[in-house]
Amino acid sequence: MTKKKQLPDLHYFYEASVQGVDWDVDFAARVFKNKRNRKPLDLREDFCGTAALACEWVGHSSKRRAWGVDIDQPTLDWSMEHNIPYLDKKAGKIELVCGDVMTAKTPPVDLVMALNFSYCIFKTRDLLRAYFEKVRKNLKKDGIFVIDLYGGTEAIEAKLEPRDVDGFTAADGTKVPPFEYIWDQDVYNVIDHHVVNYIHFKVPGFGKIEKAFTYDWRLWTLPEIQELLIEAGFKSAEVYLHGWNDEGESDDTYKKRTYYENSLGWVAYIVGIK
Image 1: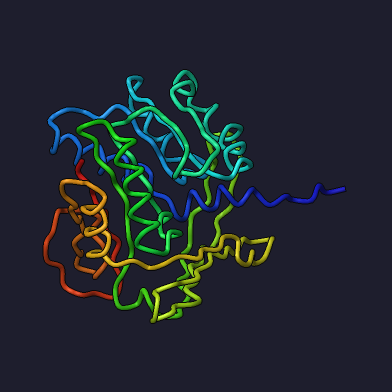
Image 2: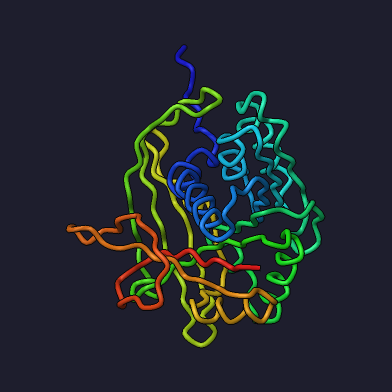
């Protein structure tokens, strides 16, 4: 009897299609070095999920440490089984904390990062400012905070964005087949900027996995984020945006910018300087 194939865990698909932790780590380390003239060593990853970013961080140097904070214990458990053990000796450089990012206690760090727009769960100015204030307290005196944001004229449209992703073998040896990632912008409320987005996957032999991940956010704007960071006590808030190649795609080269022409879609890093 042929053994029935089992669908790999959805976290594998998410990490491969959504996250670019190598880019994120390189960007944060570069900006910190430029601002502080030293290399950052300590990272706190808020809304860490499987802690892929924290794992990438410590993987670059035995001198680095990382803390990952997330409210979902099963996702942290998955990281403890499938990600962290494969760092070998550096596995001891990561500590995962199950808790609310507003109350979780970790030592002061050089960098706090909250990526993949996760902080957009805070839908009011008061809540988001309070979170930024909490982040500032979790930073060392010369610490830096890095978040990201998406936007553009198509960011508020109901649309599907499919993209093919190559198969791969994960660190734990799991073989993940090629699949299709689908970003689904389903709801946008023009009055309060609340959005509902989904991620679907199509996997050969398994069909379509509908609403693998759901996001109920407020789609903030860049000036709102900058203003709230300043109100929260950060000395400055800088925006870094990519340029464009000859095919009209992102060139993945992020530079500090104060002017940027409107476009169909963009992803920015926002950096809060303590």
